[in-house]
Length: 178
Image (cartoon, rainbow, N blue to C red):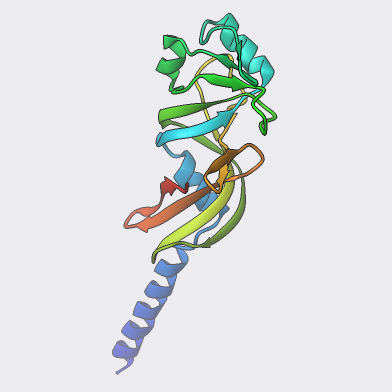
């Protein structure tokens, strides 16, 4: 009888211990986000005027040209090779900083996790965070912030919304919410 009770206690303790390993916190979110390249598809990133000027000097894009109410710096192949997928926009109404889109597999850096909630499905978490893209080029030493979205519009002041999924080997970044 004592053996059965001991086994029952052991099973309960193992179950509780396994559950504790699946708790989601900023460290697990950071590890899941930063552990390897993450595919992003048409996420907009902000950059500084200095980074834009450096890109012109290093022939990543052409010098900005006035187009309507903003300026545009046309991408060159070296910028496309880095993962930029749309021309750099400068002075666009509603945007304080220049921006572009990126597409491809990138290392990401978590600046800060702002909020976490239970996700849209079981074993999911929805996270509000400030995330940066690491671009392997001398013009982008500080990494580029990914813009958040509200009502279908990218906004530089907003953090991004990410969904993480718990799988057999731990938490993984599942997707960006648009």
